Length: 68
Image (cartoon, rainbow, N blue to C red; front, side, top):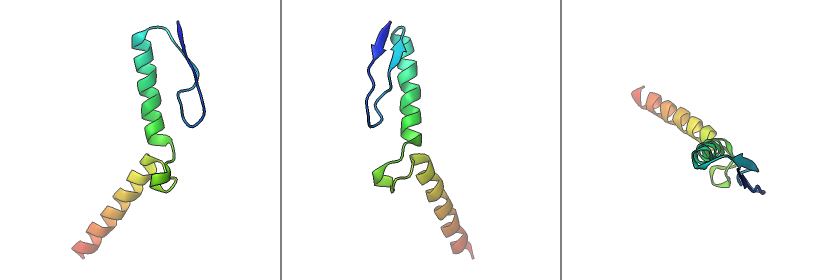
């Protein structure tokens, strides 16, 4: 059993890994969650998921305006 240390600023929190496969699965899940749900300064303090949603909405509005 191995222990991953945690820290501030979105680092992987303290988690126990039972083996390499377990570590890979847990890190992949954490990375996906962090990358989709953590606000980023470069995106105006929005999460990537929020930014993508807003971008798609703006694009749809622009396409509808062009069709009119």
